[in-house]
Length: 115
Length: 113
Image 1 (cartoon, rainbow over the protein chains, first blue to last red):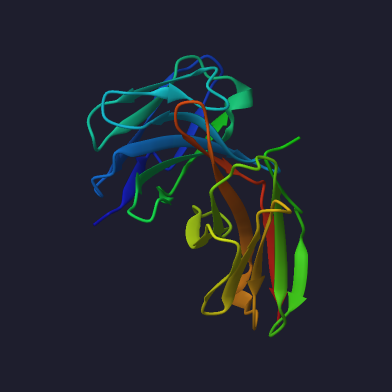
Image 2 (cartoon, rainbow over the protein chains, first blue to last red):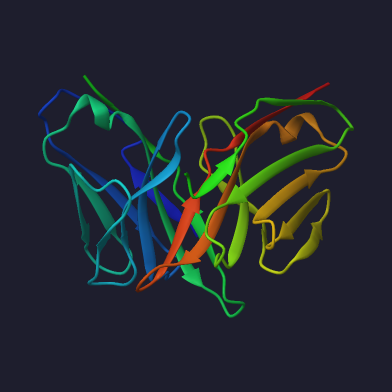
């Protein structure tokens, strides 16, 4: 099993350009997430999808859109990139277990620089 | 006030010593508590979770939870250079319609040989 995969691993954009970050998981999880991680800020939730067909805003959704393409895939789109979106982006998936807890499994991350 | 707070460190400990990491959270109704380890340039990975008051041990790691004080800690015994990483505390609390997972900013640990 590959777990959670993300593409691309690195990307440099110019201000105003658009791009889509791809994420896929093979663990049959219902929930998927997009986070950004900035120095001193920890992981901040951008958007999440509790199940196929649903998406919800997280803590920092402005400037982003998402698509839950199917149960496996959850993409993040930047329509008009800004330097403030320079960050490391992590995709994660999870499933509530019988013990009533929810463990997140993270992809390797995408390091995005916006010039 | 941040929902989950950690000392950013860096926390420097000698090899073989105990590293003690602390985390406080603001939502008294929080239910589950996690410690993730993140090596530099890598993604976070779960090392422990706890949801009952008291201690939970797993190898050299012990998580301690005190819900009355809204405090969760992680002890790393016999610290090794391979434990040098950033440790993220995460807390699940119940929102209006669903559950919410919040992360602290992380504590960087350096184990010196």
